[in-house]
Length: 339
Image (cartoon, rainbow, N blue to C red; front, side, top):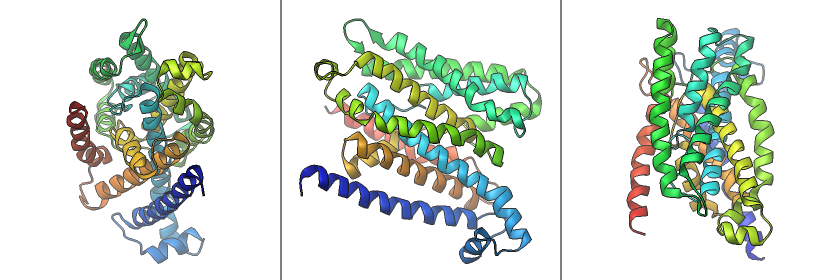
């Protein structure tokens, strides 16, 4: 068995274990809440053999929220791996770089024209957040680029933090122009409160994940070539600038569509790829799917903890994610200083 076969086999084993963990986490998430349903009863209800009350609780309330966290967790995990691969910066993350802040501005613009979040116009929310994310990404690229040197990793991080601060200020300003209820929603969104709890929100997010993930996976070899450096990547036929812009657009679309329904949750795109890299190595054909699965585990588990442990006063899932991600981010900063 050669090295590539061993890596592929390892990826399958790790992926299988993570899938089991995801299923257990989902089952636990469906069980928790103000009214607990035993795991066996959850399975019975999903198979259509539960009571009317159980069906209403699971299918109308808990299952849409679980679907949102699964889809968004996978999208954020893959987006983080993309950002790190594009920039060759292990500290790159859509939240840290200011992409989520741009998405927040897009959401506030949506709220200015459409006050309802649970009707048909909600299907267009990812488009608004994507537009805001593209604005942020464009500004970051402009300020972090230097002629002859390309994107500078250190400058990218600093510019991203500055852009995030500016866009967050715009988000708060726009939210102040709205009514009290909408302002409360904006504050909740910034904290990473999972608000997408209806099937229409699942339908809004699902096409973005289904369409974009396969396209990203097909670009695994291009991402691998980026790790060689721009000069070597060009020498083997990679159109570096063209592919970087295209992949950046995919990363922005994935991350912005995900946070559109979950709130401004950060650090999943930072932590998930690092954990995945330790499990299966740096090759993106293995790294991308494992990063997505790790992102699912983190987000579903964080949301379940936020709802169950702190019941009845549930806290935003973003608080739990930040409690995990912030110390890890500091650890990576100190580790990077040594080299």
